[in-house]
Length: 300
Image 1 (tube, rainbow, N blue to C red):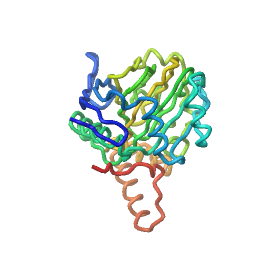
Image 2: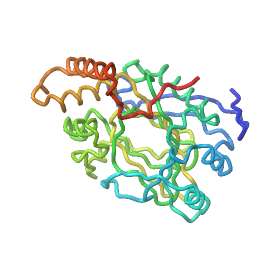
Image 3: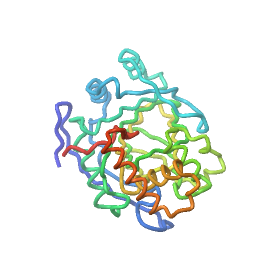
C-alpha cells in the first residue's frame, strides 16, 4: 500500500499483528499484549516531518509536562506556546515530553489510524476490539523523560515509530493493582485516583517491553502503565485510544457504584443497564455532557 501526503511519499506495509505470550490466559484482548508492526515508514517521522506535523495541529491540542518524574508522582500536563515548543524540539540537549492530541483525522496520519482500527476489529473479540469512538495521540520524548503510573479510560493500541521507550503495562484485572475504589474515583472525575498508587513490588507483575520501531502494545481500558526514555534521539509513539463495549461497561458500572453506593452488591450487568438508562434520560433532557468529548467516530 502506498501512503501519500503533502509531507512525504513512502511505501508503508501496514502489518499489525497481536502476539500473546505462551502464558496468556483468557480471551485475546483481556490483558496487555505485545504487538508487532511495520508502520514506521522511512522518513515519515523525520525531524522535518515532525515539525510540519506540529505546525499542522492546533496549539490547543499540544501539551507538555516536566520531562522527568518519578513513577509515583501525579501526572499532569500543560499547554505550551509555539515559540516554547520550537525551542524545546529543536535543541538536542533538551529533555522533552510532548503529546499531540486528537490527531486521528490529520491528513498525514489518517490512513495509519484507519489501519490500526481495522487491526483491532479483525484481531480481537467485539467486546474488546470494536472501535465505537476513538482519539489519536502522538507522544514525543527525548532524554530523561518519564510518564508516571496512571490509567486511561480508553483501550489503547500503541506503536513505536522511532527511537526507544521502556514500557511497563499492568493487568487491569488484578484487584491489588486496580481496586473498585480506584475505578469509582477515576470514573467519578479524578484523573489521578488517590487509591491508585505505584509500588516497585508491582514490577514483578508487569509486562515489561523495550519498545523500538516495529514493536507495539495493546492495553485494555484501565490498564495501569508507566514509561521512560533515556536516549537523546527522539522517541515517537503513536496511540489509538478507543471506546469499546468493555470500556463502556466498566465506566457505567463504576458510575452506578458512585451514585448508589448501598447497591454495589448488585451484578455488574444490572448496574450497567441502569446506568445506561440514566445517561440516555439525561441525553434526552439535554444535560448530559460526556467527560471524554475528544472520543469521536474515525473518519474513513
